[in-house]
View 1 (cartoon, rainbow, N blue to C red):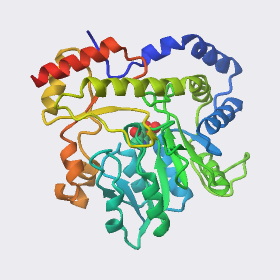
View 2 (tube, rainbow, N blue to C red):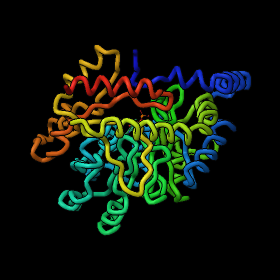
View 3 (tube, helix red, strand yellow):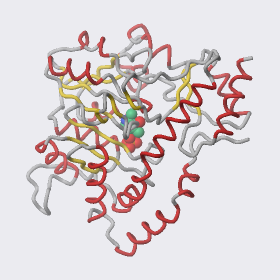
Length: 366
Ligand SMILES: *Cc1c(COP(=O)(O)O)cnc(C)c1O
């Protein structure tokens, strides 16, 4: 049996008719930038998340950069980020001229450990970017409380967490501003690059909207300089066509994760824990084992595709070598980077496939 890591072809086949006719319509209308489909998707995603303003943009990395700019963060500022994330989280901080300050992750939930925030705060600290990693909410009640106390802005990186919630409160609605990615493999993915900024604050929303489109709200009204970071009309229409399925797809991911957890219960494999009172949307299903590399090779030979998110924790990437971070500063991240392995996870995964994956994982263990 072959089990791919994700299967975007299977998803397309399940909604082919709608997608094809959507694309056809947009091409016939020949509106490729902006227009009603972009506004429509923003309204629909705002309704779906319950966040007042959705400002679409070109990708999830731009969304973080723009969120930082909107909050006035730049040169000589410091921004707290988790030690494990995709590079976008820290890259965006550097790209606005600020310095990323890494914080180790929580040993159980893999998100930024709030206990470690205080010791990293300096007079330069302006903001914190919790990442809802793998589809799991960060510890937002604690993070928001600390941020309030030290007057830090909170930017939620929701790239992996469309629809996750904690205590019934949606990912993206806890902080000052939030960012989403609609990269094709994300829980809600476009057919190319796409992203969005989300906020309940009217003034922040207006500024974000200006920055995304050369500083203008209406044509030739350049109150400030911005940039070109817009969502293509085609991508907006595709996202609108897919959005009605997102809740079902997220539920399916969660069911698959629960099934994996159940099957692996009596093995030596560390399975993912779900934070109490939260809804985990399992963008990724990440296990841990000391024999990670060997297991990965073995599964590959058995036709099972896996991946690592991420093989090197952010502080240890070559691009941050000048900060001279040591493993001892980030004991959890530095250990886990060698142990984590993402198993196949997507809505269309079948029970047969999961049984096969677990059978092979267990057979390796023996
Ligand atoms: C995917 C991702 C991003 C960036 O999104 P792009 O749309 O690829 O730019 C940012 N943060 C995290 C945690 C991500 O997983």
